[in-house]
Length: 170
Image 1 (cartoon, rainbow, N blue to C red):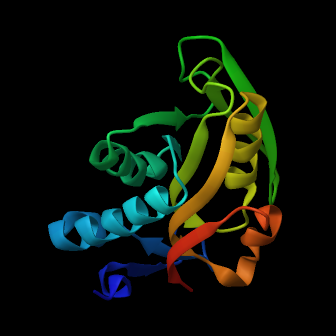
Image 2 (image 1 turned 30 degrees about the horizontal axis):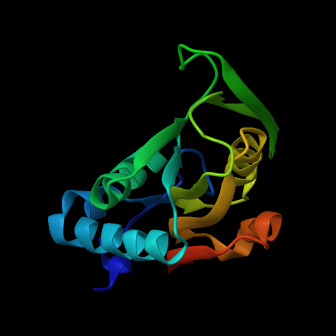
Image 3 (image 1 turned 135 degrees about the vertical axis):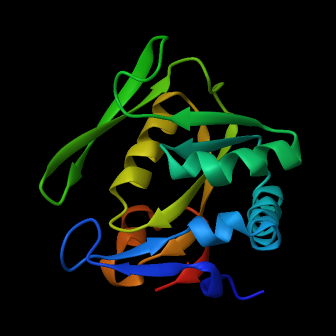
């Protein structure tokens, strides 16, 4: 199955010059969504993942079906103020400024093998911060899986030592 056929390019969104990659047609098609999920599941099995982590918000879309299919837990990584219990926090740099990600402190057990699943790898800041959160909690990041990677932004360079799966490259 050619997953690229299910991604729509939206020019000048959210601002002029950006070519937004819309994943909605892919997740709206049951067979395409299932195919992508199966690829992520196979990778999770190869990496011997025990837990799936997905960054807010589209990491939830791809991470939860992987966790469910494999009978694993899913941990959301959220923006500040969205989680009710004590959190670990990690700031990261954006092109213009900073952002922050949070995860409940006790959701990952020390030594637990964790796979990060997200929709898009761009500059790598979100994934790098997610890796730091998992490792602060004592988890072992066994890999990262993405639907789309924007190769020209070189985001993968921020975490070269981690096994990585990408289904679509631009």
